[in-house]
Length: 170
Figure 1 (cartoon, rainbow, N blue to C red):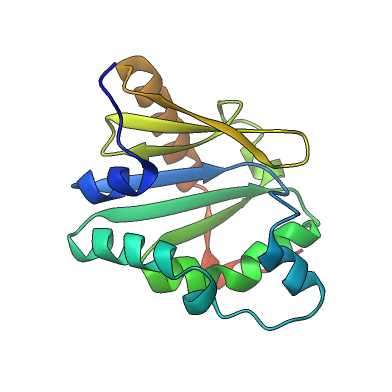
Figure 2: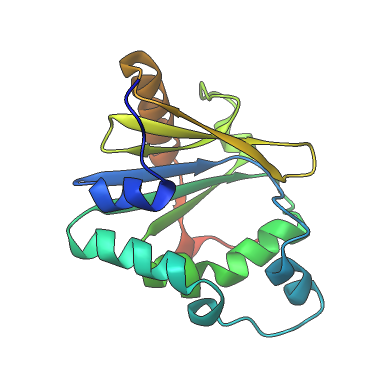
């Protein structure tokens, strides 16, 4: 496999699409932003995540469609409440389309065991986490069969999601 660029370079080189499927009910609970949110502190996504906003805005301004689907258990975890609370100012303001899907609605879907990104339906970044949701490593692949499977899994979820503006926390 050819050398794969860093994550921000994957966005920089994307020409058409970047899709992300999230399937965990909690990530990095040691994240200072999550800790601040649980303590009731006001979060300013533009201040906390300016690099993310800049990366995604540059991609979407070039016409790259960025979509994020989140499969969640309901009632939702505190971490999902946190994600939901920052989605408007972080993901939506960056130019992402975000959809939510109850895990119950995903039962009939063939899904991979890990979260992932797919860029331009040609390269994938597979995210591996420990049991507490902390990132362990990223696996890059341009294997056409695997990328096709991941792309298809994302699309099957995307057909069922509720857009962020309409999703109400259970």
